[in-house]
Picture (cartoon, rainbow, N blue to C red):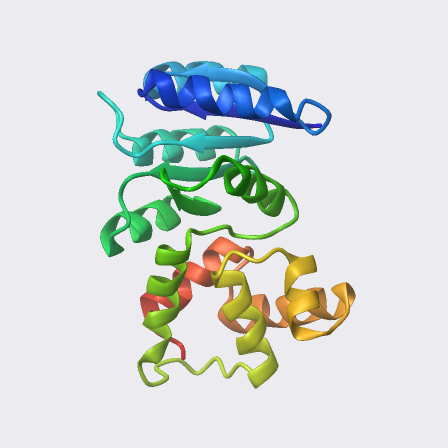
Length: 208
């Protein structure tokens, strides 16, 4: 059972997501729903969800600041940004703050559930538009001494598109253990410790 918390000032959206999650109660449980960041920062560490769906444009404290405070209290908490924004700055700020994924609010309910599954499987879910933006940043010449192999670049490219480890293995016709081996090497070469950090560093330094 994946425990989910929602942080969004849109009441109808929260209610809709709660209904969708309830319809899949054999797999998900909504254990918290908050209309503002201040309540979320106070209550989420107490209820201990596995995944948080977080809006950026919240009244009062922003979603990014809420994300930062929650990650300080719960470093291993998986947080997916769910927002209408899809521009470079907000994506970058969210990844800098520790977001595990970034999807837009027009994403279908089933794909939102898929994103929750993916992040629990080690993936970094992103909406198609955002994934394309991230992958586009790979087009600059190499600027780093970290030389990734062609296969490692393929694996990282798949992760940037929001694929889980299993989905990467299927897409590249390799085993799950081989994916983990490549990811271990990617982390070592980029000097990072998570998928989000790898994507962030790729965006920032344009390693491809």
